[in-house]
Length: 279
Image (cartoon, rainbow, N blue to C red):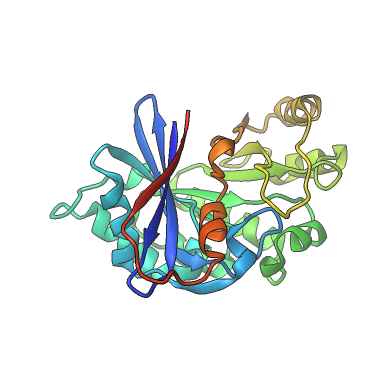
């Protein structure tokens, strides 16, 4: 079950969070910015641009409001966490403080498009967090089209910086790959992924697109998805399929914020409001 919340902020802006029920607890999917500067073509969050960074307290408050049953936190809501590096790291340290929520850092995941400099800084942090990189392409050209704000970040540098983080902390980094028909689902794409990730501390999460109003992408067929996955498996690349959830509540990042406020300020800051559930 997924439940989506819109949180009003003191300046009239709002951000959204998602509470996801799992068999062994609840995951809080939290936002790190109001809007996003990277304008991923398949995502609603960047359609209204970046308004501002969230303060560490505003990030922590999302977790507090989602309740005491939360035992995992993922920075996969609105915004690019590594583009608000200081406040996100400050929020993580507050969450893990024994005098506060005493939350285990092994239950915290940062999801990023991959900013090489920030990844190099993160490599030197003494935090046992998890890292997920939104990859979505195997060439710089295709990735720049899908993620316009990442044009200046070379794909090879993103991958190498993330793998360097993984080796430094003896952890596995997850690369998310959103399959889009005719865009990044060719045999050649699969071969390039094998070249990138065979015999590395990485795993791939294959996903299908969660439809967003006004964005014209198709959903990859079951057959294409399985063939793509099989090519990676045969080459020894760890890969799983993570199908989308919450399509009936517009659970893709930023859809509620964009639909209700068009990214602008509300007339008055609101309390947290649960707007929809999906089972």
